[in-house]
Length: 297
Image (cartoon, rainbow, N blue to C red; front, top):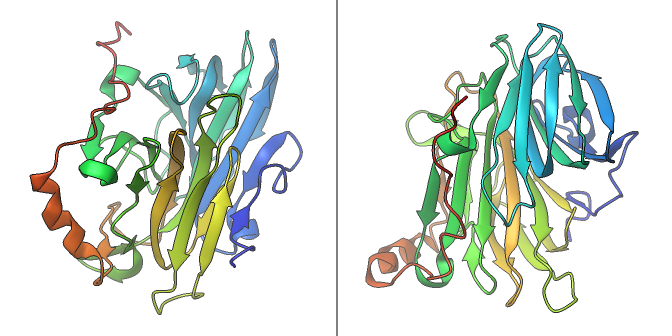
């Protein structure tokens, strides 16, 4: 079900990228994601083209150099399960070099855009860490590139950590129609990493069901580390973490709306679950970590 929307690890590799999703490959207008693995001493150059990008370390640190002369040093992190990371924003119509001393894995989250904003450093200390839901719906959201948190033209990007056994992206919700003040039209990519435990890599599950708009996206996928799911439309959720294995996913969104905003509509059959949250505690395993103290830079 929905195999064209579930991209298994390595099946969407292209050139230097372990995963390469652009609007042409996805069949939509705006959102992109690339996953770049670099060895110790490795480097990579790319042209940003008609898109803005955020360079986000998944593991390791790097230096980001733009042709405007900006040098952005990213400390990075050991893994997505170990802490919040700093990041770099680079504009459209630029040439960028990424270099790393110790090696690492880096996400390039992108969106086609019109405005050329300046390259900027995003400190880990400035990333709002939010807890959503309670009980078995508890999850942690790192809002590094959320609308209203960090200035971009069209790009919206956040990280979600779900403890083993919990459901996130729940209740199922959608953002596939432009309804001012109620819902934004946003294409979305989910990129997954699953925390290993007891010598096993672990799995998670992702559901997307048709909403009556767009392509009628219908996905029920068993996801593993390195997988991605494309969501051009539809009710998405739940994202289910198997017991014993925490789930991480990176959300990349962009769309045609004049205002950069994330407005969602809950599935009418499941939205009631929100009314139960005030009566339950947040999962004690959260927050997994918090943002560090202020960066002197």
